[in-house]
Length: 296
Image (cartoon, rainbow, N blue to C red; front, side, top):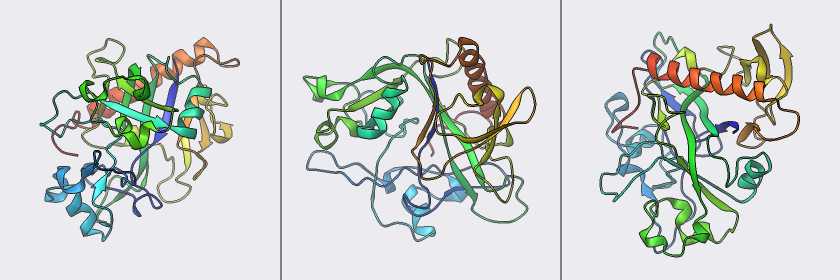
């Protein structure tokens, strides 16, 4: 069982803007990255079909138009943590990966047999307006997914009848890559009264990764167990017996993993990081007024 910090959604290079938030209330709009792979069968999801109530707007097309970023009308809905499409026959929270990105996850033990592993999804959020904000620009965890099972779409003989065949990684464009996998969430987070996947309704200081408000936003405070156990995080330094400082290497991969089944990582470290992950999810739900529903 591994813990994965996973950066997903719009940023300055993917989509051309940081994710918008209300610095007073913590409300935010989650922006799926633009879809660049469609065909006659797989069309992606139009941004205008993704609902929001952010600052009174109706859909993600309106959010992007407000910032002059509406250049591609189609979104790649992944990770899919909120059921906003009532026409789906069956929906489950999912997250797909393929190619080199999946290869890196597999190498760190988060492949086909990764039941129980936890993804903590984060990104950089920026206040939409500057008027007495209590939350400032920085990196925040916004959602999670605990792996309940995995599916390799290329091994499914009848994809049209599979319950998550709507997922982009089930399309022929994605299944051309044999290294292609979809993680499906568990029903509950370690049998607790928390869903196996979801998004915080609002952001809060409890889910903020950036330790500074205005500079060095890639400098994070994490539990001491993260000290040299997560892959890709750089320049570790201990603060005390509970916490350490690390740097996220911008532009270098999308995932940082504390592997649960590799040499050099103790069971105690994994246990404590799992407890930290569960605790931050609980705090994110409590301080963020619950879990998102209906509106992204």
